[in-house]
Amino acid sequence: MTRILKTHRILLQALLLFFAMSGAAFAQTLEEAKSAGIVGEKSDGYIGLVQTNAPESVIAMVENINRQRRARYEEIARENNISVDDVAQLAYARAVQATRSGHFVEDANGRWVRKP
Image 1 (cartoon, rainbow, N blue to C red):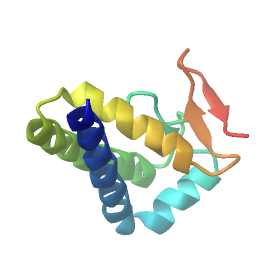
Image 2: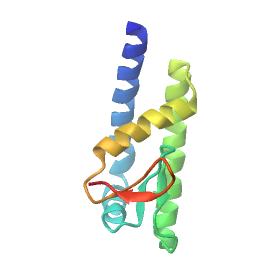
Image 3: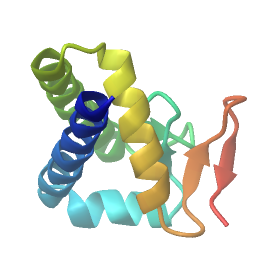
């Protein structure tokens, strides 16, 4: 049991570091896109387009961030002998906690909702 808790703690620390680092290059653009309601946190642990008519630059940014997230999720999964989906679900839970009020998150039914 303590090994599982330790593993979860390590995963959360790694995810926090990853989000801090991966967002650094895109921080202003990603933050602006979230604030404008163009993108949000999807329930699968990735960034998604809230608005289907997003500019090409935002679409490219989302694809790039999602590639980076996938690579990091795979690394964390390998290091901890768990599935990539499990890592992505932990990342989503953490992302929702970190999401600012008014920004979009995807609910369990696949609908975009603003975080209160």
